[in-house]
Image (cartoon, rainbow over all chains, first blue to last red; front, side, top):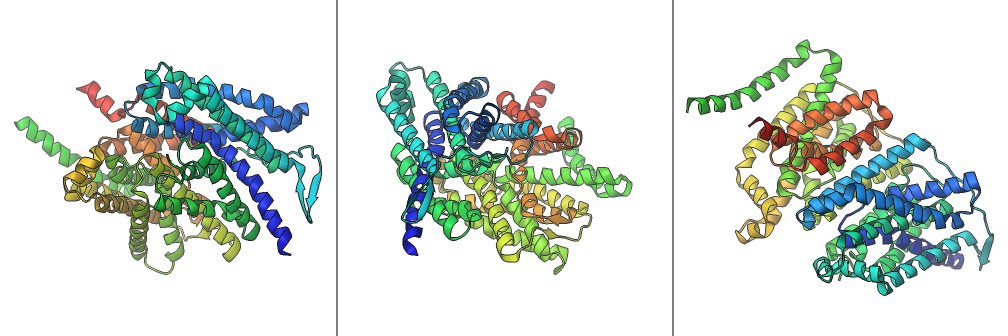
Length: 293
Length: 301
């Protein structure tokens, strides 16, 4: 009785944990580098999910493959948003506090606009598709869909590649440095505006990929699906500490397990409540996050 | 000299006249405009309450909906059982204590984390009540016997504006302003920052909860989605920014303009309402960093 349940929780938690860490990594990158807290994160995720859905519906492309196109496309969208709206704000703001506050409000407005545009364009109906299944494997009486395991593997791979990018490429190193020393980076001759633009667009790309994977995992797509994901990633960013890569992964697993156990034992409607309770606890004990540097 | 005196008189006389006009308004107004006026007054109250703490201290709360919704639910729970004035009193007390607790936990965070935390609070309450109704009581929403709430809203909004004016020069008001300018300096001067922050936040939230409790009978039916609608968190912020964050006057101007625009948009372009509202907000932040009131004043002088 107990063993299959335990196994289910262990593996289900791992899958959810890696998935959460992918959802939050874009937000953490954006906030860490640019100090723009992009609360429209979930809406970019929603756009990614819709794009994946339409690729499958209209062109019949496998969702895992359409990610290759969806990501760069959303990178461009993020780049446009940054250049048209946020760049002006970054140049205008006198202090980083002012920038944080104003960009927060701008991003909230953006999330309203994107949600409602999506509703006008594609109606508020739930849409779903059946991602081509590769089958399922059974371990000690518990079955897991292979698609779910592939999602987890892709999440890990993306995280690893991001880590390598940040550590071993010139742009990545500049971004990494901008997290802790924004002035110092400019002193050594890096154009910080370009770094900001790239970081923001990269964040959007990651949230779009998370959206593609969400559509495979849960296959319910609607214009307002992004809000809980925004909240989860915000909690994860606070939990992990801004700009902490390690914290993002560990925190992701922590939240993943908590959410999965809540879902299995109590009810999925309570996951957000539990996640929020964890946030309150962490803020009471360590206001700067578990892995703050 | 005479001119200056005249202006001072005008400054006190004008709001008084306006208030008297508002008191007798139900005698000659059509029902539609009266309902519109009620919601405009409610928005003014919300924007001024938000400004009372958040605008002055720069601790930006996006959680007004949490307190507004709590007020609504207090009315929904007790409206038939107690007289309306007692219900309002109860809502004020509950919201004050609730905000004291929230403030003690969260006001040590500065900046966006405070904003996010308070934003999540409304979502959390919404989700919890939804879960409770789904699993425990097996109901959805509640009915309140509807009645006209013009006078309660008018009185509460007036009281909010009055206490904002009176408290500006009090110990509390000055402490809050100092915290907004530079918290560290305030602490060095011996201001008990924690006490005043929590007190200010609790008062502001109490006002918001009162408005929610008074506004609830207008609907007749409420559920957690209506009560904790995130519009109640964002509109006061948009209004204050639009009008100008420097003084409470900005909040009033912004509330009047934006709520009328909201009414027009909701009737004319229902589907595009949020898109237009979001665009207004982005344009306001990018082009009017000081708010419209200051811009107009600069132009006239």
